[in-house]
Amino acid sequence: MAISTGLTKLDGKLGGGFYNGDFIVVAGRTSMGKTTLLQFLADEISSTVNVLFCSAEMNMDSISDREVARSAGIPTNRVRMGMYDDELYGKIQGAIGAIAEKKIYIYDEIPMTTDKILQSALTMKLRHGLGAVIVDYMGILGDDYGRNSYERVSYISRKIKEMARILDVPVIVAVQLSREVEKRDNKRPRSQTCGIPATSSRTPT
Image 1 (cartoon, rainbow, N blue to C red):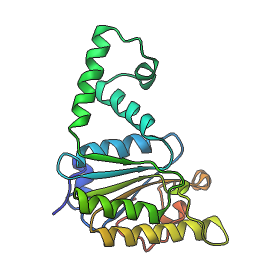
Image 2 (cartoon, rainbow, N blue to C red):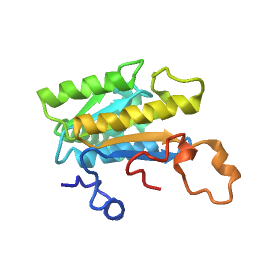
Image 3 (cartoon, helix red, strand yellow):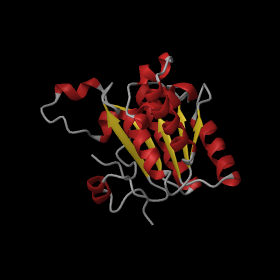
Image 4 (spheres, helix red, strand yellow):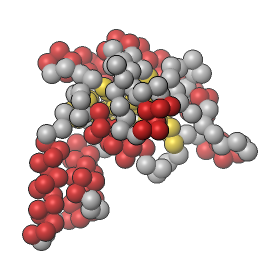
């Protein structure tokens, strides 16, 4: 049974949503909102199943600040600055209450590797149940393998694909697109643009 992404058109493209064992790539250039999209997906998915959100880029406090700000509909810097008036305090308290009810678990250990993510996910699955894993983002993972960046990313993508099969849940991973895409007339993403082998499963373009 598919897990809805919360986006009707995307669900249609994916045949209903995310399926167990899927390896899904969310690819985009720097500062294009990949983390924001992943947090949105985590929110939507957590309405039905437990989600493990793995962030190699931000710590738990930064993720929480962003989530509170997004839920309250205010800029992140307003959350971090403090000195709230009664109206803003009420919005933040309401956002915190809503977030506390969500089934999202954050993993932010550094250095983060595919093996550590798998171990954390297996532990969570045994203790609480697990419905999806989200990783932000592939390029910053600490796996050391290969003679160049392509071999390293190819290795990491294979490990994540195996992880999805072992856990039997969808694994959604953010990937930063190469700047080489700007040199092509057709800028539509391709598997090779992300450094991921074309055999990776269910990588929407």
